[in-house]
Length: 414
Image (tube, rainbow, N blue to C red; front, side, top):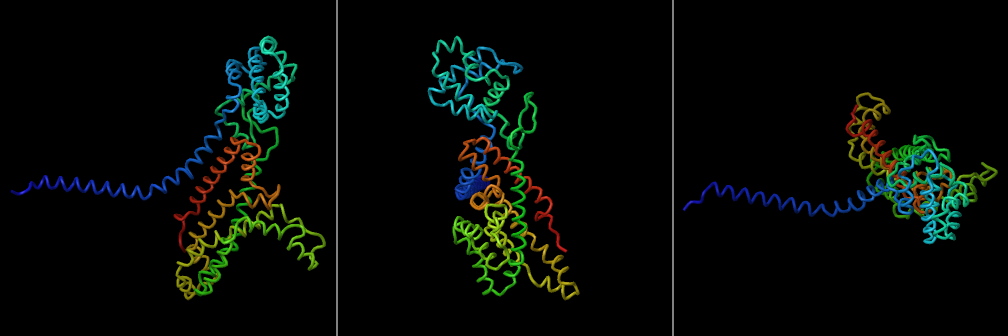
């Protein structure tokens, strides 16, 4: 008996769907390790950094009852005695648990100078009896330090107690909240905007220098005989065989006061006294240019190797001068490699840490060094996260602008 052709078609369709799902599952299984790597090594760290930049529960966890008592405070005068009494009791408990220093550190970031006041007051509250604190807590706090009688001190306490706050971003932009809640310039030292500017300037300088040095060399490698090009390419790749720390330390030996460069210049009579070459912006730029030069050469070489030299020869044979022919024919064809190398060098330069830390000193340090300082020494992870988030935004904005202006889609020949 013949089989129903409709049933056969349905069975074939179901089999085809099962085969399609099987292939999709196999494809997902192959790419799942890469997806997991991106989640744990890229998405999760950046998401955590963005979250930590405005999430700050430390003070709220240290003095929750005081902050709860301050919710009805209008902020125009000193809080009532109930706030003083509650704060005195919590300050005593923090002193017993040896956490008053943590509170002092947090409040000092909002209002410089509060650290010593919190610590001294905590020691005095610890020695006081609980019954005495409930009865005379406000007076004891005022006697402990006069800052507790100032309205600005309690505004700083309430500001530091906010769990979600934009104050870290304002600090990263050298701004702060005024007494009336408005945004104004910081009265303290303004360093971060200048550091961002210096970081971008140094990164741009390094990108230009690697381009000026790398473009002619990549062009020569792409057009040289194979044996000679391979030998020179080994020299280009040679720095990757050496540790970054070793290469940076070598520049310290070259640029220090009694180093190779100064000794040679003095021996030749060009200078009479050693030059200050180390621990400057100059040393940072020179060392990073040397380290990042291969990252410019390799993308350029890979693109130039695929350019047919007959295009340039045809332009010359038709009467074009060498320089105009190179600019109108060869240069546009090499722009993909130039763009890739420039972006690679610039982005790496902006976030570089080891080389500026070792050879840059105070003058040659970049924003990445300050981010590391807040994470490792000052323990201000929230500010470090805000600085890193702003750096990420700046890089993404510059990349978007660069892609819109000179991206691969905008390249036109001739």
